[in-house]
Image (tube, rainbow, N blue to C red; front, top):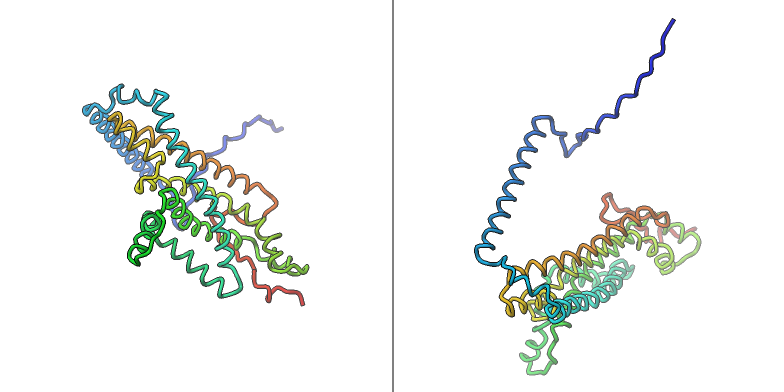
Length: 317
């Protein structure tokens, strides 16, 4: 005679990190060592923060009178809000132009014609290799300087135009590579099937590849636009009236509160950049759930397959 006893299932064990080629799962001693090092690092960081705050307090940078201007409406209406408007205006104009630049030269790099593909590739690589600050300086002062050397007159380039053109050329070159990589991420069979039903290359690109590649490219595009927004602060060097110029230069000149102004302006930049970063994260999650595209999301890992754009190899016989 056998008796049946009720036994509760054992609780699931916590998953341990598996060892791989590039990672060895730490043992008990290693985990203890990591915890000790983490604690030491946290104490060191807190100590540095305390020293910085104490130094600010000693220098009088934390006094209430230095923070008072930021609770006054005139400070925001006269300085901060116009600066935010200037930053967003330059960033929006540069973003639109950079997207157009990226589409044109990204498709140009994929052209079957060498006289289009090679110049487009040279232009993209050239502007990607130049530091953005030098590019802005050249657009701002280069044409008038060259014209004066040739005894010619050239209209003065405004700070807004120089900043927008510099941002367009640099970020547009990066976006051109993003567009090219996005189109190449569409599996080869998509273009082969399109050629098999009689579509030409223009139709394959417009109806098959670009719609699917857009899903894969969107997170990377938005991430690059975040970089563009941050790079717009370089307009401060050529006296463009952006947030950094009005908030970090004019407000301390008026009220003598350099450190509080730097903290407030930094928080505003962080808020704007985090908003775009959250948008990029949302688009990436949405693109992963989408069933309308077989392309892999750029930046999520994995090798990118070729796009199969060789029409001679895939035309039906």
